[in-house]
Image (spheres, rainbow, N blue to C red):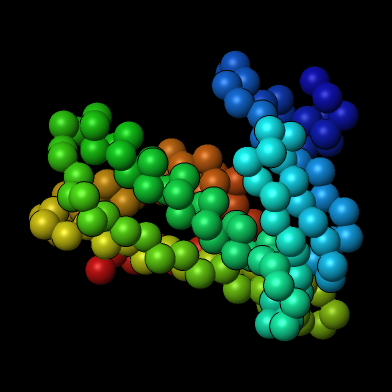
Length: 148
């Protein structure tokens, strides 16, 4: 077990299938983040800033919604359900400041056109159970997931 795993009280389960590696300098004020494979190369800025760049909340929203859509796909394949080509997820990640401390909350709005409401809800529920990003945030931030 690594020191981090010991501090958290658990070891990461299973075989590592991928490791994302990034190098970030400058933080959200005037930063740059680059992945080791060169596929990600973004400027960072404070939310609402006039500076060109994204921010960690936007990156989390994009990554989580992509991960969640893939989890819906896994749930659908298990049930032999064909997903609509126009499946979409709108993700919102809020940065809060209260009593001098920052925290996050999130909303995922899922659109599964043409899928019966009960079936769609079952897929969304299963996706939230198995999505690695949902697992990482579960119990740590307020999350609302809705089906439209």
